[in-house]
Length: 191
Ligand code: GLN
Image 1 (cartoon, rainbow, N blue to C red):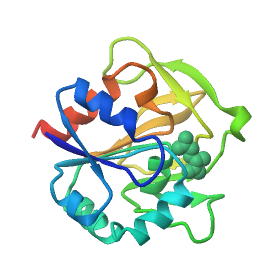
Image 2 (tube, rainbow, N blue to C red):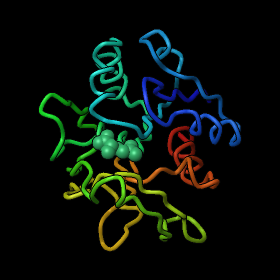
Image 3 (tube, rainbow, N blue to C red):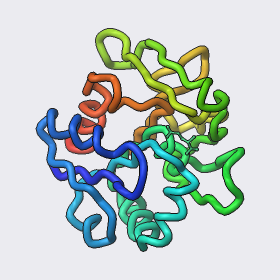
Image 4 (cartoon, helix red, strand yellow):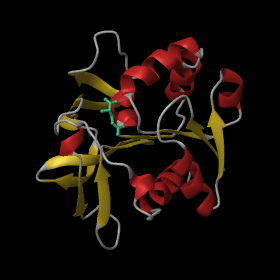
């Protein structure tokens, strides 16, 4: 199970650690050639505006969009969720997303850096609550009819799935709890 982790910018290292602990093989993806080797992909947290720029300069945007259109399973966390959403409010005008999951998000919707927070919430299909770390997280403002909401905090969706695309507004790699990644691997490789 070779799982690419987009390593252009942001919080990719811990994703690799969690994937390794679960028995998957993480591959840092920086170029279109790196992408060819992977069977699933993680788009980490970080800065979606910067990542959007780097997706263009690395030449990764078009091949990654192509792989996703062909069904590549993807986990997007925080900035990764923003990059996979259909519509982004409060983004930079030149930032572009993949529209891989039918949700709209508001970038930095919970406020600024000081408004980062942690919370525990139930996740559909998991035994016991998950401890989520939210760092300048996006707020999900619309969820399409084919999207499954797997977790909410104060009625706002924080974990959503459509097909083999899974997105979280929190950082699941920072909780010392691999259950969200495990769920993603099940989703990606159980067919
Ligand atoms: N606020 C960041 C952005 O707009 C996301 C923050 C994160 O990934 N932790 O991309």
